[in-house]
Image (tube, rainbow, N blue to C red; front, side, top):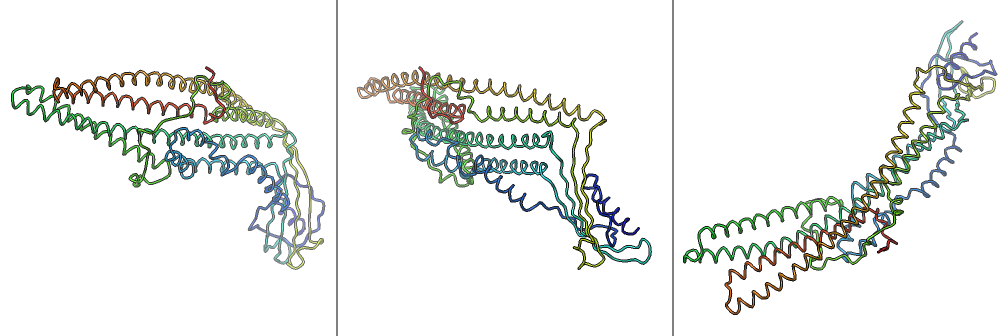
Length: 486
């Protein structure tokens, strides 16, 4: 009787972790009243195979340091002929915190894939159960060692579908990382060019302020002599003060942009004094931006590819939800050693073992399974609509970037024509001033007009460069092989 009760207790413990087990042997010595220190382990061979497979898959599809520079297409950035800009792009690739988080997210999803894949493998648990009990007769101590194995037979592929679904999230995270690299590179380039733009505007504004100060001083003398009215003098003073205020705003914006650039490259904003940039007079883009591109370029954008992955995932989720309606087949086994003497614990006479299986068919679940299936189908429809939306949005962004590039180029061309006319007008004014035809005040005002036009031209030049970066981002840095179809 004592052996029978001992076997019943251990079998009940086993069933709490596995499926019904059929006992084959019924001879066991000793007893136990509680369990302690249950440890979950995997078979060494299975663990070794999993490691080898994961290493092969990871080396084939996820390369932590490979392709990072290919993501940002450093060759395209060389079109600006600015080593300083290229250096900031490299620093961002190596040090940007958002990019490091994107890479860690890939690793996180990969671990989720491994965790889900474990559901397709058998599980083995072993424990050590020392105890002391009195059932019939004198009380006595014993040692127990249960080994329990269980496995859900994935006959219909439900668990495999769930693993593939999680794997799609992992693949989507890789595309998110690529998108993050392109986005950060674009932000670094745009911010850097904006800083150089402010260098140009500040230099020109300083010249304007000097001219306005000189104009104000000349008008002050003329006002004292009664040549210029007090009203005109006040306006000149207001213009001078407004110029100083605009200069202060430009310097403030440049400092904020330098702070932003520092964070983008993973540096402290306290180090902005060390941040170099090219002379604004020499910065120019020598690459080719086409008037038209093939619509196939959209198929290579990471957001489009991610939407495709999420659509595939939604389809897998529907399959897995549908298979919840199918029977679940479980296999299990138990090996139990029990003896009141530790040295005789591992003997066949003190061993009980059993194997068994079970088939369970859902009959009534309160509508949970069908509701889950409908929810997954709805999620699939949403993923499909999002896929279509991303397709349309991608086309819009590429077309918008091309239109902006071409229109801003045309605008810059017209402004350069105005600039040339202003230069001619200023040159004529210089001759007139030399001949005494016009006063110094008139010459200064003409020079201020020229400086204002120069500011407008520089603004448009840098707008065009930022437009090129917007195009680079719209085509997901995939500018290699794009040719003009004009």
